[in-house]
Length: 205
Image (cartoon, rainbow, N blue to C red; front, side, top):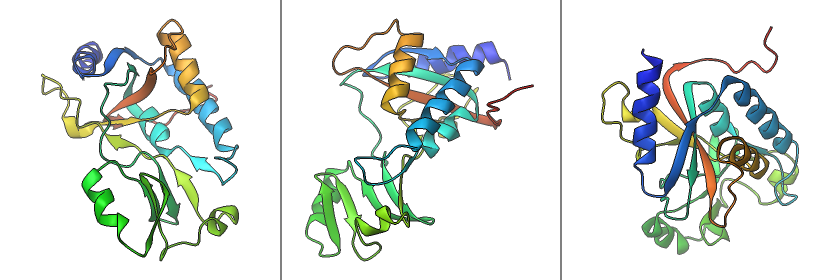
């Protein structure tokens, strides 16, 4: 695949999305730094309630091409959950952005709202004991980037995913790629093209 053409097509598609201020290609060296920052964050707790594993960032970093986008408050994320709680392979809690689904769940006795849009499925876990005992853990998954539609068929939209970096990583990305821009409402996302996977080697020879 023509890498230059791929980058041109994808960056144009990303930058046309409402709420995205700018976007850049992430260097291979910075992929390793991002992974280090994320792993450090995973060793810390979320509000003292347990470990957060950012599988989404890992998935993006192992894509053939990785981009960082600077977003403002007009960026409308996907309705896919950006934060979930897992017990093994089972989702036992999740953030929900779909208002209709929130309304449907609000009347159920087996659902407890940890936050206005974060639900715990009480019949699947004991909260917070299961998290404190490390039976369950928080996870930020990779999310389909349905909003990114390249005009060229060089890459299919279904092969584009994105993820939300942790705050220290967000700060690093803003400094590294966007001149340290940190106005209120600005954030970053990482976007990956899944045409080909490759492992991010933290210690290359």
